[in-house]
Image (cartoon, rainbow, N blue to C red; front, side, top):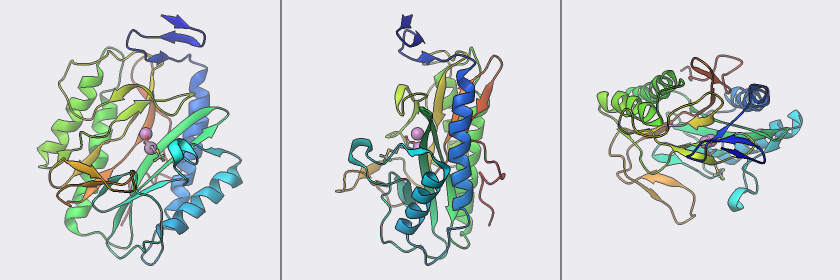
Length: 268
Ligand code: MF3
Ligand code: CO
Ligand code: CO
């Protein structure tokens, strides 16, 4: 099918043109450069609002635009989700302490293209369980990305992520998912991080979307706090998340948000 802006599948998933990959690459690399710079800011004693202020200043200095400031009333340049916070943690006066693990999620707009990525960081030294959770969540994202190629389905991606996480006796959050993006922040499809192999829409060259699994040490259930944003694990178990923006190529995929400094996975 066609609409005024180009090709769309039956499921409403836009198929971008080869030339569009360059726009996504620039947006993704801006996001990744910011997430690289943030690594030096994370330490015990620092507040999450100070980290967010740093991110907002970086975004300004780069001459790009935050996609989250003003999005559905959200007022910050990042989401910062500590320990049992699953996602959408709001930056504030909370002070990081030694051993805290946190996800920082940034989305920027460059010439109309959206780059969306998040990673885990550690204030000081993580304990062994936290380090394992980070490891498994990172690797779950990467096995999901390995399933991205034309002819596979979105269910294949969810299935390998779920099998990997559950194979390590951890659980995959069902209440939040990845999403199509491109010239918009959130578009079809919902990219589930669990599911049945062979189910869902078939991947085609030119699809742009995020994969952003949230993995819990305990049960998968979440609840949203009274601030209407912060999602936490119901059982208070630790949660981790990694997110990349990717584009389907003729024989696999391109990761738009690779770290220029090789810092996507934290070192500790
Ligand atoms: N970046 C998040 C995502 O991965 C969305 C954050 S929306 C906000 O889709 F408003 F909470 F920032
Ligand atoms: Co996203
Ligand atoms: Co994000």
